[in-house]
Length: 233
Image (tube, rainbow, N blue to C red; front, side):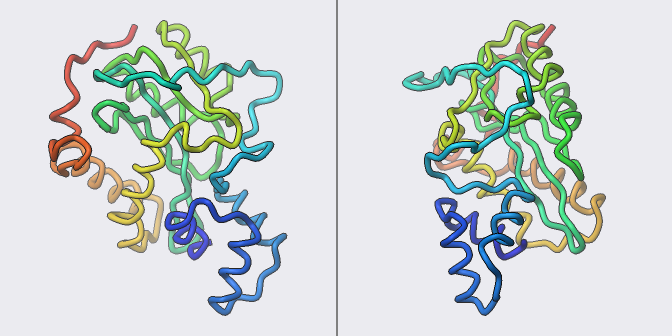
């Protein structure tokens, strides 16, 4: 799983067959069924159009993708959220973040040992203490299509946008954040316990928001770009 995670971060377009072949080249004899099972367990999917990329919660409403062609020109115009896998010495956890697209500011994050929706809702509540977006974009996963999550957004008057199936690049800024977090933090440490991961990730996100200059922002920090904060109801 560690090898799959690192290779996925390098080549997110690799599907099961390419991942299986790559592992065999590293000396690991595994079949495609095991690779598929592990990738699903980690929540990793190759970035190319295909059916059944993200499974919505049964019976819940799906929303259109509203960001195509939209010019992002101010903070709190668009927020986005996604989930990734983070390895521990023994096992793994899931990490969710909420990101402001304009400033790349991380507004909230949480970790969980399972993919239940509660940790995503906790990250959302954290983020809403700082600002209120016009549009909130996610994939079609059950965590984000749950009534608790979409209902919280709608009660605050937030327009909901969801990626098309097989369209991981619809949420490209969060995908870039995952690459940055993993290469600059996760892969440099060997988290033994969940508490170690939480402490290190907290330190990293503070550094990322307040100190790390961002090339796409003219070498300003996300904090410097995030202004005009309006609290949510």
